[in-house]
Amino acid sequence: MRVMKWLTTVLGLLAWSNGAWAREAAPTRCLAFQMFTGGLESDAMRMSFPPASENYLARVTTLRDAIGTAGTNGCHLGCVLGPIAFDTPDEKARALIENAFDIALKTEVAIGFHIDDSMFWGRLKELNTPDNVEWLDWNRTPNTGRRLDWSSKPKKIMPQLCFNSQAVKAAVALRAALIGGEVAKGLRKLKAAGREDLFLGVIAGWETQIGRDFDTGKCLGYHALANTGFSDANSPADTDREREKIVADFIAFWARSLVKAGVPEGKVYSHIAFMSDSLHKLAGRTNPSRVLAPYLQTINFSPPEAAFNAFCVPGLSTYPQTGHLEQWQVELTKHGNPPWASCEGTAMDPGQAERNGKGVDMEGYLGNLFNHGARLVNIFGWGVGDRNNPFRRAAGKPAALAAYRKFLNGEALAEAPWPIPNIPPADLPDKVHRIQLLLPPWIEKHGPAGVRSLMKKLDGCLERHQFEEASKTADEVLQLIADGRHEE
Image (tube, rainbow, N blue to C red):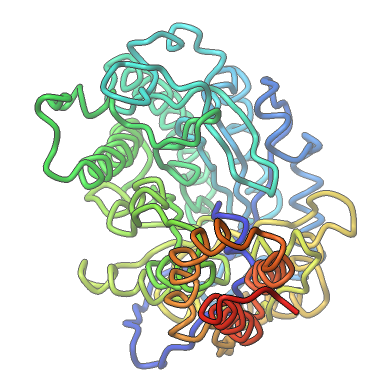
């Protein structure tokens, strides 16, 4: 999940009471591990995903043997293969799915598939037209490419597709028919062996959202809005809410198409990602000098409610983040507390991973999900990169292996009371705003030299989240301005 760099140092997940979450006695729960597929045909995919061996049988066997069990008591070990993208040729997608079902029977590890729903589509050159890509504005300005904020350095990939373009929807239906048809064949093979339990499902998206334009960072979606009947002269009352509906409709269209093609109901999962509303609000206090985009724009129009429809199990990315699971639970409650899925995540905040952080306790991470209605948890990081990769370390360390065994043996998991994040003093934003208002005329009269070192110190404290020191420094700046003097 992909948030602004300066937010990623905010740690912790607020604790919640055990009684606040509804629990369901789901028939089978699955602890799965994302296995990134080889054969990444496009340059965009090669630069965005880790390289992987195509010997999936060996990788799945190694995982099972490292943990020591494939599960018991309604708790399954699983592997999720993907991404299966538009850039994945049809013959390779068919071979991958067929091979996966054979692996499930050989290893007794449940198998599933992870679809990239719209990011990597360069193979479909017929879509690369103004009729099928998103616009920057009502003037039909095409986007320059989608921006991926999957690390501190953004990546540029194919342009953002228009979700309700007829050609795009036709491509979705065609790809869903291929995947669904192959899954149906595999299920017949499992049924003949009496092992239908070895299919965990299809994740129908890879953090579905209307991504941003790479060159400008602007929000997109004007093409889809125009297809819905809006225009510059007839703009929506709430443009952001309309774009949210477009994302939700695209998720539902994928899910409905997969079920129609042969994927069983209850085995299709949506996959969104969002920054929590509480973290978004906290951001305004963490860096008061930054003007925040509205919430729906910040999360690229994929709030929790977008994950829910009649054709799939709701799913999302779950990394340790302030207020994230609490907000998700509110949405689950609105929908009657259905089973749900963590389609991507691990016990490591991505921002902390970039600073070589240690992450959080894996058992607590899993307990916070499985103990509160998660049917599927898909761990990212197993075997990824070299042994120093922080996600790989978090997924494969001995304590994590012990947590996996505990769950798969049907034992109760502990939960984790994460620490409350470092919150700035309530009056700090007001102090910074007063400085922004009063400092320019002061500089016009006295010049910048007299306040430069204090402002450098203030900026540094805000950047490092040293909020108490930042507040004291802001007081010094305001006092200097009030006295009409220079720094000593």
